[in-house]
Length: 153
Image (cartoon, rainbow, N blue to C red; front, side, top):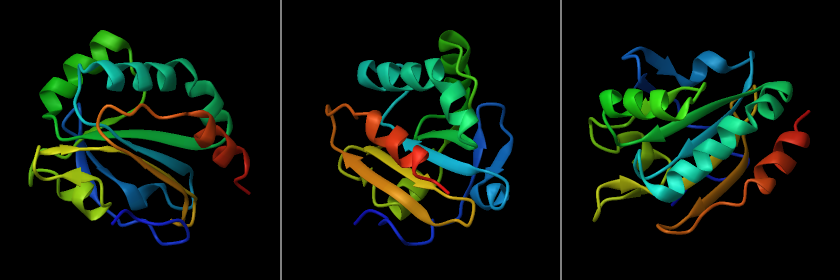
């Protein structure tokens, strides 16, 4: 079951594409976080979604929101993908233990070994303000995220 609105976001530490550790709780009190789980780097729907985030990143920054992408890919493949697409937000590797953070958030498809499309907006206190889970092959409507960001205090 996915993490629900109103609950505290489970904390985690993952490596980004520069092999640097990123801890969710380090953003508490400093910025809101849009946590975007996606199946795999270099895949079609994921590319479209993350490119839209890239192109609209200024809207999130203006809303005091740090975007974090999470997949089960290795940091090395995430680095190559970020360079290729010009992503200016951290992509985090949930590679090992494989899918552990995605599992904690209720968005890991164990049968296939990938995260599904889970989106969580976490406020500065660590509370989940928006949660949505889309299945494989089902693209997300990012307008819902923007409405949730606009509703943040």
